[in-house]
Length: 156
Ligand code: ZN
Image (cartoon, rainbow, N blue to C red; front, side, top):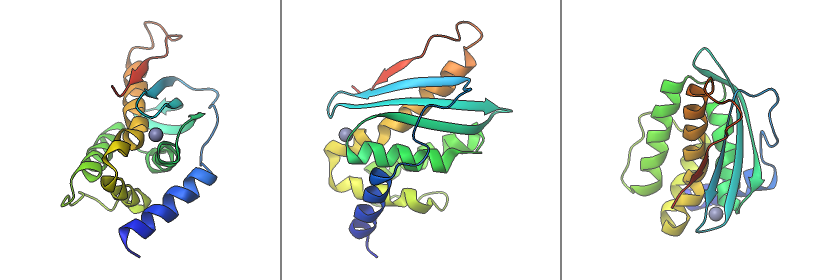
């Protein structure tokens, strides 16, 4: 299966039936993401323990790519440590932008996101969820200061 075929199949699958869709309760980290170029909006809720993302969910309204990317991200990072997530984010970021990039690990279904390279305007749709995840992790670090403040990020 070539990349464009894989891309269409995986994106469509996750867009039609997003995994981990909803609002997680209880959650001890959250963030909102907005991609003004496309209009994608994302709300992410996480439960962190021992530096590990135990569980997470997302909801919101976005295009097929932002929704599918968020769905795949939730599957990929669930149960992972923050260090593993940082490495994965780095791989995904390069995958979205560099044609010759060789990931440091087997990216599984996330490899399909490489198809986004053919549509540069869509890179921000695909990366929105990852930036939102980073914002939620940062919020968790500061949550003792104000647990009710949910950070909001914009890709612009
Ligand atoms: Zn979009």
